Length: 472
Image 1 (cartoon, rainbow, N blue to C red):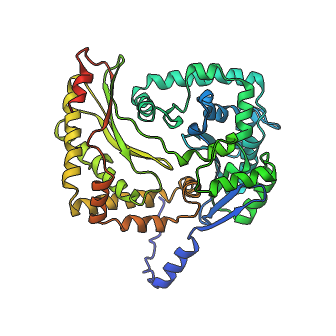
Image 2 (cartoon, rainbow, N blue to C red; image 1 turned 120 degrees about the vertical axis):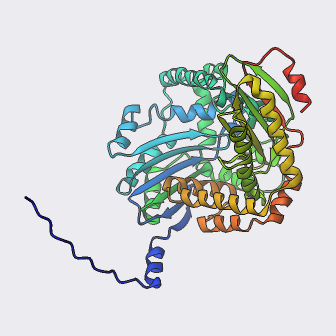
Image 3 (cartoon, rainbow, N blue to C red; image 1 turned 30 degrees about the horizontal axis):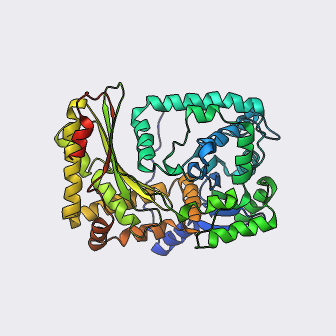
């Protein structure tokens, strides 16, 4: 019979607090920033205690930078670069990253396009090689363009089958009717089928320039190593010196430029933010549920009330303790899903409230939502609520900071929006500065739900639903 030796228990000596602090400081992330000679901005945050590296090559161009005849083109180009490059086939692009256990992904938003890798720190060179190859040296072979059209058209059809997602695209279209910001990221079946290779090549040439790129890298890395690798692998076609200088001047200038080249025109988009429209619409579709989306103008990403807006949004519909979740789902049992969402862009923003319910419950759900919006506008929030939801926001930020991909995203976004580094501690301090007075100032001056836009989608009765919506 096996026997086990009794382990001697010894009491560990308490470590001095200074020792604990010094160990923490060793693992404190270190930020560095360099602008390469070709114009690419490189930002890094070293996390020496992490085994992985997250790399993102960001292009400051998205749906809102498309011309009227380019609907869906930013997303289409994001797809096409994965088909073939000057030195890799589609299979090789995937194989090279997966062979080392890494991930490779990309996504297009309304304001930018991101190409992202996640791998072990020893493979940072491979990550930047693949990213540089994808973004800077795609082949855009005619046959690949035609095949990928079919893929994107299928993606559009698939998205249209998901009404809880489609309703947001339809809402954007009506909320920003005169701006590319309101157009679907995927484009339309007609716009994609009519896309020509020459249009793709021209868009890539105009928009995928060094001046529009940010390389963001976080994890167990050294900044000098990242710079050397970026100079070797990330080499987009550069503009001439005169065009580069003109573009940088356009970015710095606060004056509204007149019509110019597509590059300068794109940089001046934010000087004339779109005006949101007010509407009440019903779209009838076969479905088990009616999908409800209510929205109104809100703050932009740079607004000084940004964190007050985040706290108010969390209170309104940000989780299971929020007012809308408690009132509509827990107290009444009218929905499975209900939430509010703050969407911020560089120059404009919106607050939306989504709910999915049975058609017979839609009127009651909308009336409760409107009641809660008016209550928040009229009465503001209590100090106990402020403390609860500030803690929620801070906890979410701090937990997100443990994810190096999340930090990589934050570095890039802060560079694009503010042109500087914002540490996690600085962001948390901004949340802590939120007071009852500052929240009420935000609610009084920038919380604007009095006459919101509404969109209903689903199997609604033929009764005059739209006329009823106008009475709310």
